[in-house]
Length: 371
Image 1 (spheres, helix red, strand yellow):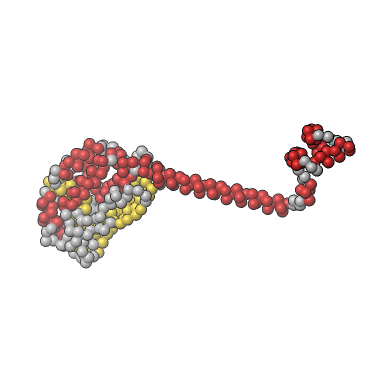
Image 2 (cartoon, helix red, strand yellow):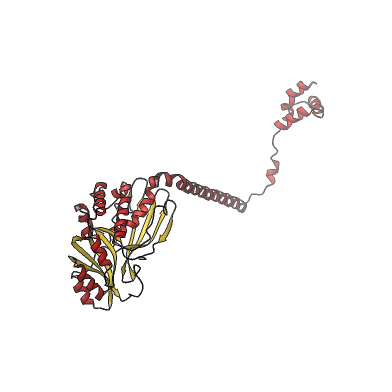
C-alpha cells in the first residue's frame, strides 16, 4: 500500500470504518510515517471522557459564579478609572488650555472674581480666594471682608464660573457681584456715632455729590485724625453704572492687598490669601488698581457679558475706564477707626451724606494700612 493510498484512508481509519486487513496495513504504515501520524493527530476527536469524573455541586457553581462576577466588577472599575484618568488628562492638556483658557480667559475670570468683589462693594477686601479647574469649566471664589477697626468682618463669598462659552455665576446665570453693599443706618454718620458712644470702632461710608480731587482725597487720608481710609470709589460719568452701583461708584482698596494676578492662576487649581492692608493708604493706588481691573474686563468682553446688567456693555465699561483715568475725581471714601476720631474726620471731609457700615468693640491696637 502506497503512501498516497494511506493518505486517502486516514479519515476512515480514525472513524474505524476499515476492515481488519486494511486497518493493519494502515497501522503498519503509520509506525514509520511521521507525516501521516501528524494528520491523524489533527483529525482525531478530543477525549472528553475525563470531564465525566468532575464533580459540580451547587456550592462549586456558586463559587465559580462569584469569582466571575468579582472579575467582571474589577475589570469594570479598572475601565472607569482608566476612563477618568484619560478624561482628566485630556482636560488638563487639551480642553482647559485650548477651550476654557483660550486667550487667557480662565485666568482673567479668576482675577475678575477678586476684582469685582472689591470694585462693587465699598470697603471690601478679599482675604482668601481659590479656583478649581473642572473638565469643562473653571470655578473661582473670593472670600470678602471689610475692616472694622483693625479687625475684619465677613461679608460673604463671591463665586463665579467660566465654561466653554460663557462667564457668570455657578448656576449659569448672570453674575451679581454685590456681596454686602448695604450700608446700614438711616441717621447721619455723626449722629449714629454719637449714639453708640466713644468706646467703639466703626467703619463709615462717605459720599460726595461734588467729587473730590485726587489730591484732596489723599490729603484727607494723610490727615491728623487717627483713622484709615481703606477704600476709594471714583466718579465715572456713566448713568448706566451709577444706576446699578449707586453713589459709591466703583473703586478699590487704598492699601496693598496683594491682588491675584493672571500669572498665578494661569493653569490648574489652587487657593491663596491676600496680605490685607499692609501699606499706607494711597488714593492713586486705588485708582490704578481700579483701572487695571476694568482693563481686564475690557480685554475679555465675555466677562462683561456675564455681569448682572445687560446694559453694561464693553463700550460703557470703556467710557468708565476713560473717566477714571482722566481724574474725574473721588465719589466716595470708606474709613475706619475709633468713633471720636471718625467724627473729626467727617467734619474735615464734609461729605454730602454717609452711613455707618458696622460698629465693633474697641480694637485699635494693631497697625492698619501701615500706620
